Image (cartoon, rainbow over all chains, first blue to last red; front, side, top):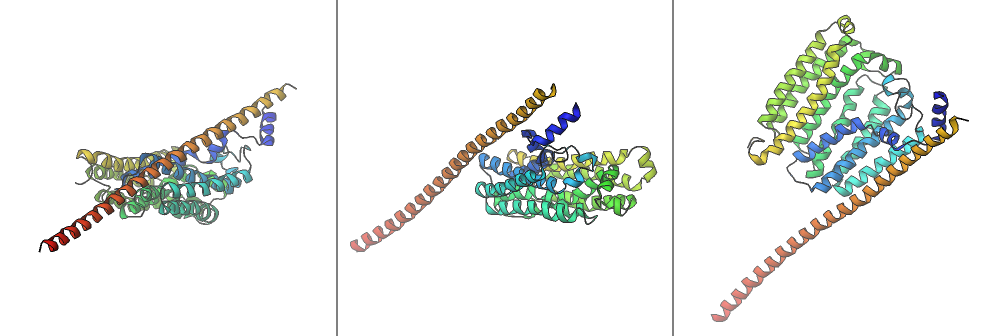
Length: 313
Length: 76
């Protein structure tokens, strides 16, 4: 019975609205929306609420479009990895060619619309982000080098810069620092995931650092990147988007994150395997809170400034 | 035999969800474009009005200076 229904589903090609929405990687899109919104709101130039809403929407659609193109190109390995087997293409709900057309249309649409709603700098940055994620990361780096996540992480780091450009029409130290924060955060975040999802990446032939250089090296890399990340995260506190509240939050968050990275580095593989990678899983969860909390702190500094509590003035 | 109506119903359900979703997206997009157009035109009109007011004020000041100078020359 279930087999019959599955086959019918594949043959008809009549995917529901939710299947198309799933192509946009909604969870990744939520991070894009949030960081772009913080970038936009933290900027010193106010934007009309409707234009701000439209800009964030088009940034989200652009991010989603790159996610759809990523699913189109990676359909072969998505069928192998357990984590991605339920995505619309491996599940047989949407064809690869349809996904490609959908992703390409939304890419062009989002860039053009952002250019009309905001400015050409923001539109150009969005176009570059889509290009970087699809061509540089997905097509080139992901299957070629174990440093894939390091350079590819830039794609996920652009949204706050785009949000800032929507408001100011340019790039500044603050927007570059927000970019760097996400850029440096991405490798330890994904390597922690790779440590406890080890068979998935190995089976798919994706050269993650733990597959090519071993788990000991991956643990050391997590610690090094977390050490490099800390001064950047704390440094934002001394710019125009920072303030005492941000600085205190950053100091606490980075202390916790460094402790997690230190614990991961010290752990022998046998211990990790024995407790089903408890420390690595906790570090992964903390990494999500870490990034979210930094951007919330930036938002609070901006929001409290009119009441005399935010920023350094 | 027993599966056919159920399968057809599923197909129609998916198709309906897609059509309704697409309709809502297109409708929202039209409203958004209308709103964006209104905001952009309002801002542009305000900027133009401000620019015109500044030009008028500058012209008035220039004319006033010229008038007072010429009246001074006449009285001399």
